[in-house]
Image (cartoon, rainbow, N blue to C red; front, side, top):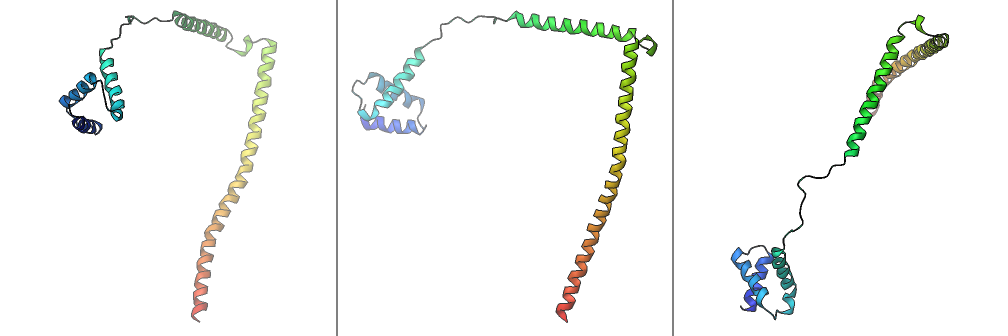
Length: 166
Protein backbone atom coordinates (compact mmCIF):
# COMPACT_ATOMS: atom_id res chain seq x y z
CA UNK A 1 0.00 0.00 0.00
CA UNK A 2 1.41 3.39 -0.93
CA UNK A 3 2.68 5.62 1.87
CA UNK A 4 0.83 8.70 0.62
CA UNK A 5 -2.44 6.69 0.50
CA UNK A 6 -1.95 5.70 4.17
CA UNK A 7 -1.12 9.31 5.08
CA UNK A 8 -4.36 10.48 3.43
CA UNK A 9 -6.34 7.82 5.30
CA UNK A 10 -4.67 8.79 8.59
CA UNK A 11 -5.54 12.44 7.98
CA UNK A 12 -9.16 11.43 7.41
CA UNK A 13 -8.95 9.24 10.54
CA UNK A 14 -7.74 12.20 12.61
CA UNK A 15 -10.68 14.26 11.34
CA UNK A 16 -13.11 11.38 12.11
CA UNK A 17 -14.12 11.09 8.46
CA UNK A 18 -13.08 7.50 7.71
CA UNK A 19 -15.44 4.65 7.04
CA UNK A 20 -15.13 1.26 8.71
CA UNK A 21 -13.55 -0.19 5.58
CA UNK A 22 -10.89 2.54 5.50
CA UNK A 23 -10.11 1.99 9.17
CA UNK A 24 -9.74 -1.72 8.45
CA UNK A 25 -7.20 -0.86 5.70
CA UNK A 26 -5.22 1.27 8.15
CA UNK A 27 -5.22 -1.52 10.78
CA UNK A 28 -4.14 -4.08 8.19
CA UNK A 29 -1.29 -1.82 7.04
CA UNK A 30 0.08 -1.36 10.55
CA UNK A 31 -0.41 -5.04 11.43
CA UNK A 32 1.65 -6.45 8.50
CA UNK A 33 4.16 -3.69 7.80
CA UNK A 34 7.52 -4.16 9.45
CA UNK A 35 9.08 -0.98 8.16
CA UNK A 36 6.84 1.92 9.09
CA UNK A 37 7.91 5.47 8.37
CA UNK A 38 9.31 7.13 11.52
CA UNK A 39 6.67 9.88 11.51
CA UNK A 40 3.92 7.19 11.54
CA UNK A 41 5.36 5.19 14.44
CA UNK A 42 2.88 6.66 16.96
CA UNK A 43 -0.02 5.49 14.78
CA UNK A 44 1.49 2.01 14.64
CA UNK A 45 1.55 1.87 18.46
CA UNK A 46 -2.04 3.09 18.59
CA UNK A 47 -3.40 0.51 16.18
CA UNK A 48 -1.35 -2.29 17.75
CA UNK A 49 -2.80 -1.35 21.15
CA UNK A 50 -6.33 -1.40 19.73
CA UNK A 51 -5.84 -4.82 18.13
CA UNK A 52 -4.31 -6.27 21.32
CA UNK A 53 -7.05 -4.93 23.57
CA UNK A 54 -9.71 -6.40 21.30
CA UNK A 55 -8.27 -9.81 22.04
CA UNK A 56 -8.32 -9.36 25.84
CA UNK A 57 -11.02 -10.99 27.91
CA UNK A 58 -12.02 -10.59 31.53
CA UNK A 59 -11.45 -13.91 33.24
CA UNK A 60 -11.96 -13.12 36.91
CA UNK A 61 -15.00 -14.80 38.38
CA UNK A 62 -17.62 -12.43 39.73
CA UNK A 63 -19.62 -13.40 42.81
CA UNK A 64 -23.34 -13.55 42.16
CA UNK A 65 -24.32 -12.11 45.52
CA UNK A 66 -22.25 -9.37 47.12
CA UNK A 67 -21.00 -9.90 50.65
CA UNK A 68 -22.92 -7.90 53.21
CA UNK A 69 -21.59 -6.91 56.56
CA UNK A 70 -24.15 -8.13 59.07
CA UNK A 71 -22.64 -6.31 62.07
CA UNK A 72 -24.06 -2.95 61.00
CA UNK A 73 -27.51 -4.47 60.65
CA UNK A 74 -27.29 -5.95 64.15
CA UNK A 75 -26.06 -2.64 65.58
CA UNK A 76 -29.07 -0.89 64.04
CA UNK A 77 -31.43 -3.50 65.48
CA UNK A 78 -29.84 -3.16 68.93
CA UNK A 79 -30.13 0.64 68.78
CA UNK A 80 -33.83 0.46 67.90
CA UNK A 81 -34.46 -1.96 70.76
CA UNK A 82 -32.55 0.22 73.25
CA UNK A 83 -34.45 3.35 72.21
CA UNK A 84 -37.78 1.52 72.39
CA UNK A 85 -37.09 0.19 75.90
CA UNK A 86 -35.95 3.62 77.09
CA UNK A 87 -39.05 5.29 75.67
CA UNK A 88 -41.31 2.66 77.24
CA UNK A 89 -39.85 3.15 80.73
CA UNK A 90 -39.92 6.93 80.36
CA UNK A 91 -43.59 6.83 79.40
CA UNK A 92 -44.34 4.52 82.33
CA UNK A 93 -42.63 6.91 84.72
CA UNK A 94 -44.55 9.87 83.30
CA UNK A 95 -47.89 8.07 83.72
CA UNK A 96 -47.18 7.20 87.34
CA UNK A 97 -46.76 10.84 88.46
CA UNK A 98 -49.56 12.82 86.90
CA UNK A 99 -50.57 15.24 89.69
CA UNK A 100 -48.68 17.56 92.02
CA UNK A 101 -49.71 15.49 95.03
CA UNK A 102 -47.78 12.50 93.65
CA UNK A 103 -44.49 14.46 93.66
CA UNK A 104 -41.98 14.20 96.50
CA UNK A 105 -41.01 17.24 98.57
CA UNK A 106 -37.78 17.83 96.55
CA UNK A 107 -39.58 17.46 93.22
CA UNK A 108 -42.33 19.86 94.34
CA UNK A 109 -39.72 22.36 95.50
CA UNK A 110 -37.90 22.13 92.14
CA UNK A 111 -41.22 22.55 90.30
CA UNK A 112 -42.11 25.69 92.29
CA UNK A 113 -38.66 27.20 91.75
CA UNK A 114 -38.92 26.54 88.03
CA UNK A 115 -42.33 28.23 87.87
CA UNK A 116 -40.92 31.23 89.77
CA UNK A 117 -38.00 31.54 87.37
CA UNK A 118 -40.29 31.31 84.34
CA UNK A 119 -42.59 34.02 85.72
CA UNK A 120 -39.59 36.27 86.42
CA UNK A 121 -38.28 35.80 82.90
CA UNK A 122 -41.75 36.46 81.50
CA UNK A 123 -42.14 39.71 83.43
CA UNK A 124 -38.71 40.96 82.34
CA UNK A 125 -39.48 40.14 78.72
CA UNK A 126 -42.78 42.02 78.99
CA UNK A 127 -40.92 45.05 80.37
CA UNK A 128 -38.50 44.84 77.45
CA UNK A 129 -41.29 44.78 74.91
CA UNK A 130 -42.93 47.81 76.52
CA UNK A 131 -39.64 49.71 76.10
CA UNK A 132 -39.69 48.74 72.45
CA UNK A 133 -42.95 50.67 72.02
CA UNK A 134 -40.96 53.89 72.55
CA UNK A 135 -38.55 52.87 69.80
CA UNK A 136 -41.47 52.11 67.52
CA UNK A 137 -42.84 55.63 68.11
CA UNK A 138 -39.42 57.19 67.39
CA UNK A 139 -39.13 55.13 64.20
CA UNK A 140 -42.58 56.27 63.07
CA UNK A 141 -41.71 59.92 63.65
CA UNK A 142 -38.40 59.55 61.79
CA UNK A 143 -40.23 58.11 58.80
CA UNK A 144 -42.68 61.03 58.84
CA UNK A 145 -39.73 63.45 58.98
CA UNK A 146 -38.08 61.75 56.00
CA UNK A 147 -41.31 62.18 54.03
CA UNK A 148 -41.43 65.87 54.94
CA UNK A 149 -37.83 66.28 53.72
CA UNK A 150 -39.08 65.38 50.25
CA UNK A 151 -41.48 68.34 50.37
CA UNK A 152 -38.68 70.60 51.55
CA UNK A 153 -36.49 69.50 48.62
CA UNK A 154 -39.30 70.26 46.15
CA UNK A 155 -39.73 73.70 47.73
CA UNK A 156 -36.00 74.36 47.50
CA UNK A 157 -35.87 73.38 43.82
CA UNK A 158 -38.83 75.64 43.05
CA UNK A 159 -37.22 78.52 44.94
CA UNK A 160 -33.98 78.10 42.94
CA UNK A 161 -35.92 78.27 39.67
CA UNK A 162 -37.73 81.43 40.72
CA UNK A 163 -34.49 83.11 41.78
CA UNK A 164 -32.74 82.11 38.55
CA UNK A 165 -35.52 83.58 36.34
CA UNK A 166 -35.69 86.89 38.24
